[in-house]
Image (cartoon, rainbow, N blue to C red; front, side, top):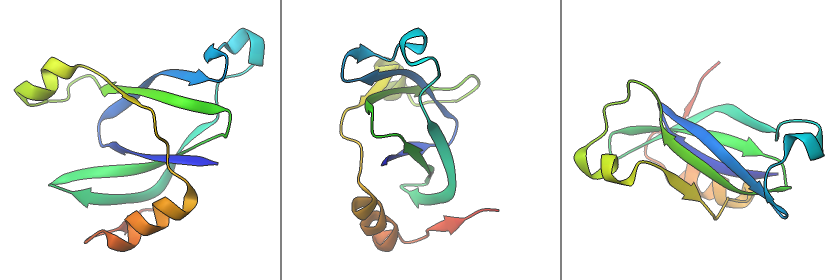
Amino acid sequence: MKYFFLSDGWIIGRVWELGGLWNESGWRRKPHIQQMHLCIWENGEQLWLYRVEDAVLMVEVKPGEGIQVEAAAKNIGQVVLKRLMTADQVLDRLCSSAKPLHTP
């Protein structure tokens, strides 16, 4: 499994696998991406932990509808997460966070 943190209110766009963009027809399913019940606070933002299957190489994320983003973020529009985290990296991040939270 691989992991990433995503700011509250942002959504997942396109997903890439080894052969390119995720092909739901070829895989006969959507990629397995699951929001976990863990989040951290960083610079006043709530970041949720997501888990993805090993076949996923990159994930595009973008602000969701109704998200008020700062002017700099509006210019970006979207972000591609190229380096997904391992479980050990997530544990390090959670341990170093000032306020890790668990929600039911």
